[in-house]
Length: 255
Ligand SMILES: NC(=O)c1ccc[n+]([C@@H]2O[C@H](COP(=O)([O-])OP(=O)(O)OC[C@H]3O[C@@H](n4cnc5c(N)ncnc54)[C@H](O)[C@@H]3O)[C@@H](O)[C@H]2O)c1
Image (cartoon, rainbow, N blue to C red; front, side):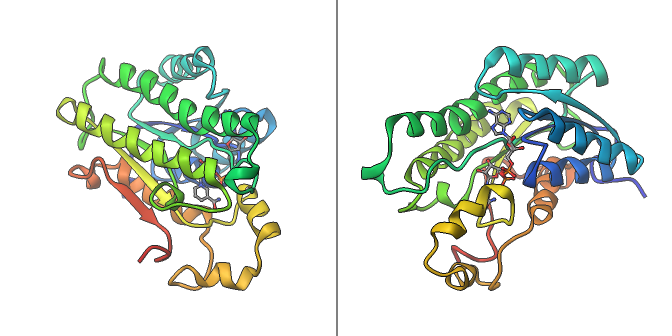
């Protein structure tokens, strides 16, 4: 049976860990050729190796999403290696300190905005420019940006992160409106707490892990693959009429 994204070429940033690794693996399992991009070499290489060991096709490329030259080289590598770019998952991100707004240091705020906002912006720009040169695949090219439920509602303990994820939802919707008639769909995913290394500081500061768990209607935290499956679906022809959607993947946290 053909995979959901058979023959497509996918780029995943932050592919060395957590949600990005799960998406890269799932893209490959569903038939895509995958470029895994991450700032941490060993972790990104490991994801690509895991995919190849399972019989899939993947390459690693080093990227710092805050650097436009580095981002452009990741796109160039993708096109040189596989001829085109059909699907992008702009997912690299950081949490920043867990602290109230009044306690936040300027340099920490700047770093969160740099990686989570400017990083996604630079990736989208380079990806859109490449996609505009290509004939769209069935259902259109797809860009999926990882936002968060903190991009839909305020978050008292991670305010800069919340600012950054609101910006991701906003730039996703703007791009969806600009490029919808040109064969490119742009969506965001908004996960609640997913058990990855990024979420660990949230537990250290939490009053009670049980209370955090029960904020989700399903009474548990999410797993990276539960976000990956939504990203791959959004990238497939099955989601051909879905664009500009901040898709909650939150176990009912905001229900
Ligand atoms: N885990 C959660 O609870 C949760 C919830 C909502 C949204 N998110 C978002 O999901 C995305 C993935 O996070 P995760 O939970 O898998 O975390 P993670 O820490 O496991 O993975 C993040 C990856 O991004 C990479 N990265 C960081 N800065 C980078 C840079 N400048 N350039 C390139 N790569 C860089 C890291 O090396 C790492 O491999 C993030 O955008 C995060 O904000 C996570």
